[in-house]
Image: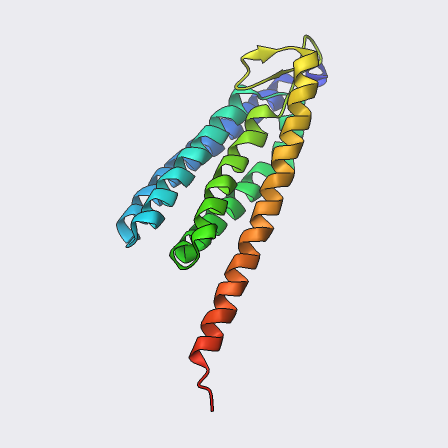
Length: 183
């Protein structure tokens, strides 16, 4: 299938991908430094560092496993949109973590389940076996197992996202009730 793509277009996609990757790395470094400077709480700093590291791991996994599936997902901007949502939500979740200890554990699981679907998502071209785990494991059988693991981790990530939103809503309701004077 990749053989049908003209060389110039394929080269254009590679150059565009490398430019996006470079801009993402630079932006990630700037964001990490800015978040460390602005962060007042130690948990927020740790989450900022963990978020930056997890995004770098996902980007590395994305490029080292690059194949037809990731090519299609890249064109639809799924990893970019998901990454932005992940970074913003993690910053917001970390701000409320000290108010609810369960949110800290949920947030750590949220970070882990962000990384794992990308690592285990198998990919391949039109030749050879499918591969996953930074392109190191080449096996169709194991790739099918990894696909289902990736799917489960992605569903867990979504569930943890929703759970953290529920926790924050509870925290805000509690704060709102405490601010209302009783008569």
